Length: 103
View 1 (cartoon, rainbow, N blue to C red):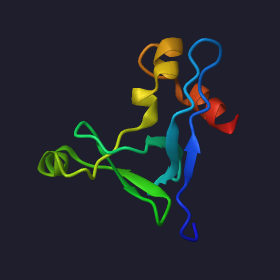
View 2: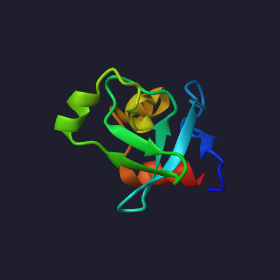
View 3: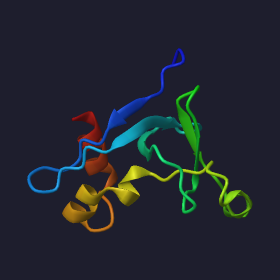
View 4: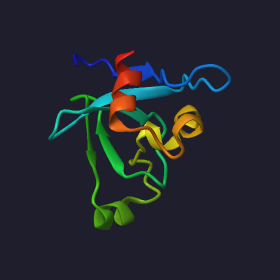
């Protein structure tokens, strides 16, 4: 990534509920699948990010509990995106999420 943060914006939503939130577009460290990750850490988070590598990983629950309050865990943006929730209930399917990212 040559030191650049993989910052972008959510392109989900049209009409009355566009999102456009700032997100990190990161690849899962094992599968390589890209996902939008909220840029702000949260106590409800379950994702650890490595901005230098442009990757993320899901943190197992025991480790997550130990790290609460440390500002080191993030959330997948599909969980928090108001446009995705408005259009598809809780979150979009994988196919819809990929379509929104690929644009």
